[in-house]
Length: 72
Image (cartoon, rainbow, N blue to C red; front, side):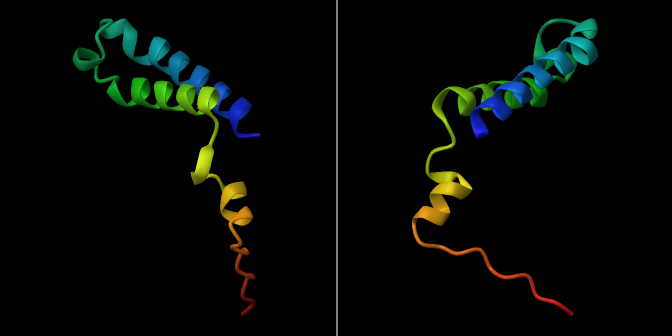
């Protein structure tokens, strides 16, 4: 489930860069679009490589159980 979501988020960040930052110039350093480009390529990497060992599914498979919610 992480791959399709990461792909959509990558597209969203690319769209945000084009709409908000690129009218001020194409270079991310000059138009303050570094974060949008960083997130775009990070999410694209997750979409291509998968979530790996940092995912919640891998964490549960290693034997960790989610903590029960405490009621007050």
